[in-house]
Image 1: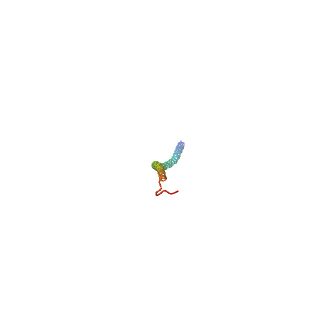
Image 2: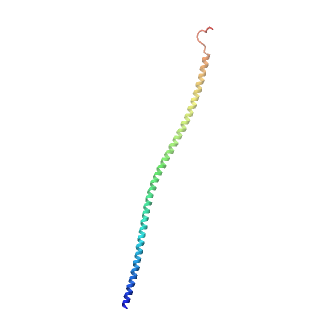
Image 3: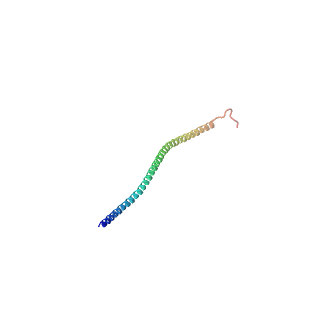
Length: 127
């Protein structure tokens, strides 16, 4: 009977060792899967950090572009005001030029009228 008890104990220990070995292999596989997932998460995190830096750079560029746009709009407003002023000045100059032309024509007509009325000096000519 002792042999059978010893065999039974050996068999029980072998079964228990098999069970432990199976659990060990399952745990080892689970750890390897978790390591692989952890590596994927770390790569995704690195990609996220990289994208985050790119977004910051793009936001800086966008802010610079907004600043440039504001400066251009301000310059455009100033130029539009200057253009309106120049148009107004041009209209005033055209009006003044037209008045000078009319005034010149009036004096020219007066001068021609005076010359027509002008008497010759000296004795009248014989015909």
